[in-house]
Image: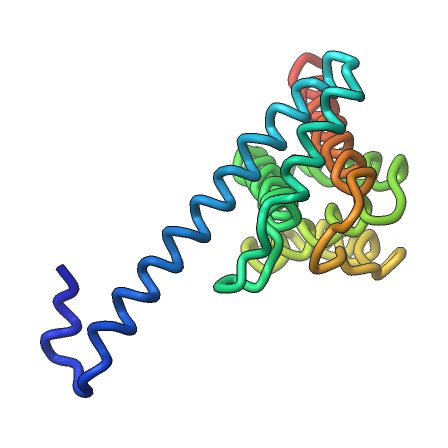
Length: 181
């Protein structure tokens, strides 16, 4: 099952590998649970059901802290989701098409606090993953440095989660608008 264990030295190596694998599976399960709850909450927000969205976000907020990854699954999922979305926009953009950055700039102009910090963090991820044209890279750095605020390691309030969900919904709306123009 773990071929590298056959060649590893030490009596506890197999136990450590199995333990790490189990912890990873638990972390993935927590992340998936957070994602399911927060996806449903975002859908409710989009439908105008703020109370229902808040209740689902609260359930996600009450998921246990992931000691293995040292993150809260709801915060982690929201940051990963925003990063994934911005990354996909860059990947799908035609060469020379910087509308993805225009959308990020517009989105950041509408946000503040935790939700803006999550977008800036996602923009940092884009910069670390893609070689961008010089002008896009410069603009991205300017957007990041405008506030310089890092997202909290753990969002502790339902309102923070809901604000980031609203930012995710707005990001989707801006992207859809650009596709239809």
